[in-house]
Amino acid sequence: MKSRTRFTIAPALAAVSVLAIFLTACSSPNPSPQAAPTTGAPANVTIALDFTPNTNHIGIYVAQAKGYFKDASLKVKILPYSSTPAETLVANKRSDFGFSYSGGTAYARAAGQDVVQVYANISKNQYVLAYRASDTSISSPKDLDGKTYAGFGTPDESAEVSTVIRSDGGKGEFTKAVLDTAAYEAVYAGKADFTIAATTVEVLEAEEIGKPLKYFVPEKFGYPANYSSSIISSNAYLKSNPEVAKRFLRAVQQGYEFAQDNPKEAAAIVVAANKSVLKNPALIEKSAELLASDGYLRNKDGKFGTIDGDQWQRFGDFLFDNKLLAGKDGKQLTQRPDWSTFYTNAFVPGQ
Image (cartoon, rainbow, N blue to C red):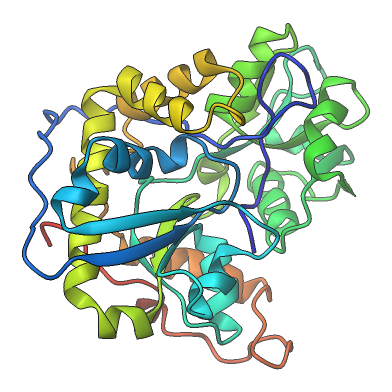
């Protein structure tokens, strides 16, 4: 399963899609990138993208361009986004690592796929419920009752929207239209009332084109925090290649540390590596600057990559309690999973 939403970019409403982040400030001083360990034999590593190259992936492209992978005796191949989800590629040993998100990892692992989160490249959820700023009929989540939601077809969307509305005193009833990449255009044009968006992409872009958006943060209205972007691997790979995995994630962390300290240069690196896809460098730069300034690259303790087990517990329970998880046979899970098996901090540098 690929990332739950798709993000338009460039001046045109239906242009190339990317993904990015919105953030909260962290007062800890920026750590300097540390040298990745170079012990061990040279190794080839693959990592699969979950969508079009974007600022969620910024640390990978920086590590490649700055030679952090090379310094760690690694030759890393970035597998482009395809119709096969990154979770499937990882579980079937077609990629060593991949980009995912909490929901995607949960759905895949519940269904018996060998995937596990190994790094929190983005420290918290980036998605919000967005609506036209000019729509005076909406001022709080309960006003979304009876409105039309432009969605993307992922399993947890309806539960998320209903939870947010009910938390504000509404009934949680709305009309759902699965529009995928046309969702934003539908909201802009008034054909739908609200959607799920990333503030540092759609909100910025909407402002640029003169169609500003307002939004509600789901975590403030009963929806559990989760990782909207993460790096996964498989237990099989980690068991067979523990030292390579550590070297890889150390170099990856260097990349994200560099992006924290040098967002403008890091954005330029991502654009340079993907010139045929990323047609709006200014938007990528704004996104990277928000990543660095508002605390999405580091968690509240100022650390990079550490996965919050309590957060996984709350989010996993939400999915299970809302009957959103299916097993290998495609039938709803009847036994609550052990959420501690869905992630590991064992390979996060500094743990």
